[in-house]
Length: 208
Image 1 (spheres, rainbow, N blue to C red):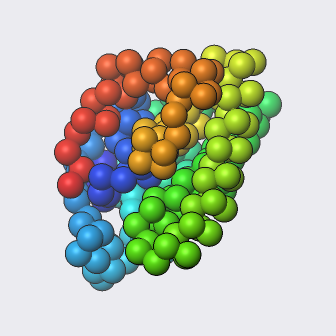
Image 2 (cartoon, rainbow, N blue to C red):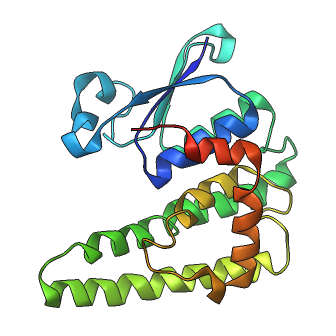
C-alpha cells in the first residue's frame, strides 16, 4: 500500500517528495491547503499534533502495522531506515547526517523562512529591521554550507537524507534573495542535486 504524504507545495513538503522519489517508495499525495488553514482540521491533527505539514501515514509500518510520522526531519529518518537508502546503518556514519539534518532543521529553514515573512511586511520600519536581521543570518548559513561543500561532495560525505532536507530550502534561494553565484560550492551541489532524475520528479510532482 502507498505511503500517504500529507503536505503542500513548500520547502518542507518538497524535502519529502524528493526523498520518496529517490528511495523508490510508492506514495499518494494528500494536499493540505495551508492557505485555507486545512492544517487545523481534526483529521490532520491526529497525525500532526503541531498542525504543520508535512506528515506521513505508512500503512505498512514496523511489524506490518500502520504508523504516522510528523516533522520533516523525523520523516526523513524514518523513510531512510525503512528503505535502507540515504541513511547509513553505521553509527559513526550517521553522525554527520544527523549533524547536517539538525543544522537545517534548526537554522537553514527557520532563518530564510523569516526572510520570506518580512519581505511581505508592509510597515517599512518593521520590514527593514526583520530583513536586515534574518538576511544576515541566512547569508551566514549559506557561508557555512559553502565551506562544508568545499570539503565534501554532499553534506555528510555520501549523499544522504540531509541533502534532501537542505535542498528543500535551497530550492527557494531566489525567494529569500540569495544569489548562488556568491556561494560556488553550494551552487555546484544544488545543480548536481536538481539534475538527479528522481529528485527532479520530487520537485515537479503536484503537492497543491
